Amino acid sequence: MLPEVDYSTRLFTGYAAGRALTATTLETWREAFGRGAPRRRPLAVLDLGCGVGRFSPVLADVFGGPVYGVEPARRMREVAARQNGHPRVTYLDGDANTIPLGDDTCDLALLFLMLHHVPDQPAAAREIARVLRPGGRVLLQSSFSGELEDRRWFHHFPRAREIENVMFPSRAAVLEMFAAAGFTHERTDLVECEIAPSLAAYADKLRHRAIPTFEHLTEEEIKAGLASIDEAVARETVPVPVLEPAELQVFALR
Image (cartoon, one colour):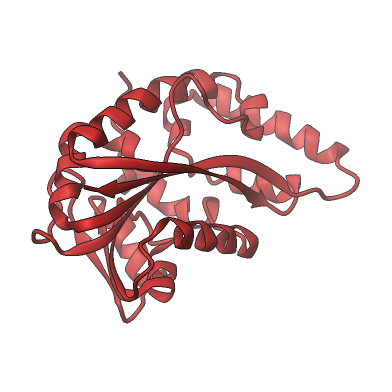
């Protein structure tokens, strides 16, 4: 088991820049969220583990209702309020096991690359079911242990794949916990995301060390990995976008 990552010490300082979404990627996810959500509007949305609020304003614009960005790291919430404020978005202190909302409050919950940080994931699935109205949906973006996507940075930081195989839950465990909490797995959407418009831009984002996996690498591994990707950047003559595949799981509350 990996040590817990504290987003209120170092990670919050470079997270917004290191995990910034290109306009193309933001539109890609906007469309994917729309496909997975209930058809009616407006929708009240829970952005669980919202971090710096990368998606919270988009959720408010797309679904037209209130958005509750719940995030346990105080420094991340401060960045969210400062950089991603919106009239219909409220950022709240809380986590997946103690969501600070009443029963039947929301129509939709977004869990974007956050489930692996939750200590008691089955309890979190039950807590999400509590705050959703009947027929509510969960949109889950997560990698799965044993079937990680081929990410460009794995080629430069070889131990990162090993770390993430420990970090992320298995697909079977996730499907089982949501089924036990009263959800039906409706479908899996495959989404291709532009991570950066070029390899040079990708390397610049990696320098912020905003991926929590960096917290489990040694300084020597990080230095060697950044040098490796710099060598690849030097060989890039024509900028090519860095793309990564991702999955969006859609669950409906029975």
